[in-house]
Amino acid sequence: MSRSATSALPPRFSGLSALRFALLIAAAALIIAAISDVAPSPQRLIEGAPRMSRLIGRMLPPETDLDFLLRMAGRLLETIEIALAGTVIGVLPSLPVTAWLAARGLGGVPLVNLAAKAFISFLRTVPDLVWALIFIASVGLGAIAGTMTIVVDTIGFCGRFFAEAFEDADKAPQQALSAIGATRVSIMAGAVLPAVMPSLINTSLFAFEKAVRSSVVLGLVGAGGIGQELKVAFDLFQYRSASTIIIAIFIFVFAMEFVTDRLRTRFS
Image (tube, rainbow, N blue to C red; front, side):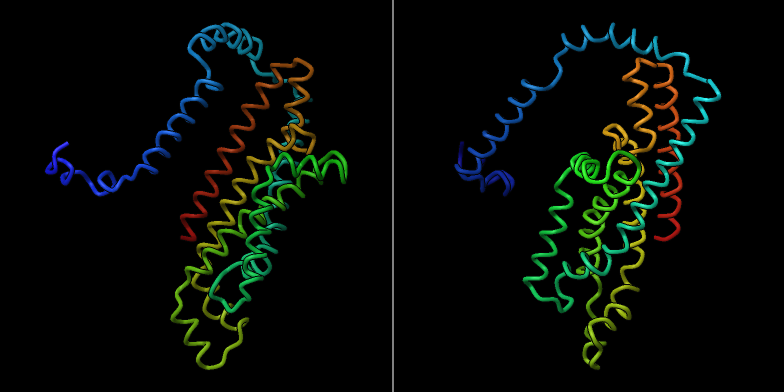
């Protein structure tokens, strides 16, 4: 390649070192290997299409038995309760305990900031289903284990984004209050919280929306809610009941997303 052609390359290409090039090749090889190992091949999709068609045929028409619909409605209500209770209980400690301690620049001790961030990362890293299995082993099957799982997941989710909102808050009001001798609590209440409140509300609504979807999945391992009813339907080969539950879950999740979107628009 000529000198003029090299100089015409964008900086991100002209500055590509041998090490970066090797890393890009390794990443590309890893992606290709992953696709070849676990991605479905066209042949597998073609072979599975008739079985999928037969399954869908067994799921139609959806179950409309009144007793089943009433039982399903009760499970949906339990799912809402798990998501709502878990989100509210999880948001409350996320604000003063995890986010405040994890936020830099608010007068906290660096070691405490690091420990709080590590704690939040740990809660967020462990998958929901693992937490659900831990709580099921601790308190037994049912909605309580699901609620405890949502609480832990909400603390990990909100703790991170609350802390980032605190760190990004306008520093001028904080410095003004600090100059007149305001305490850390006064600075938080008078300068930080009013500035970040829209972000906190939006994050809390996102957490509730996430909890709604998670609470559906948690029922598959016995943590209560409509997911538990869905698992029973598939275990007993009651595919018509399963299709009714899937439709109900779709309507339920879509409605919750619609409501939270409107609330986020209002509080933005």
